[in-house]
Length: 117
Image 1 (cartoon, one colour):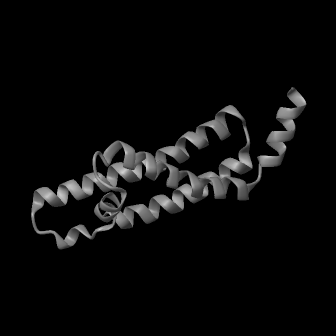
Image 2 (tube, helix red, strand yellow; image 1 turned 180 degrees about the vertical axis):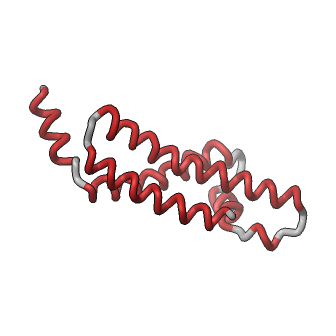
Image 3 (cartoon, one colour; image 1 turned 45 degrees about the horizontal axis):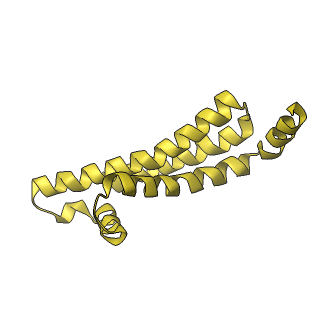
């Protein structure tokens, strides 16, 4: 059993696997955010709410709702990567995988800051 675990760790401990995983998990996190925050909205309505430019809205209350929804959804996306980082770095000790995961998470976080604000 221990040799199977070492083989698995050796195969997956690559920068590119962490990078790709860091791209896929936020998409799953977005769907989880839709299930948690979307309520009774359709997916297309939720997507429009998420992508609409809030600067075009002049009512302060509605603008705050748009920003809150975006922030919450982005947090779900980034939490998926944080969970993967915890498992890969602290539990399984696969460092190169974790490096790829952290690098794409930092890139996505920078992009999301520009997207939200």
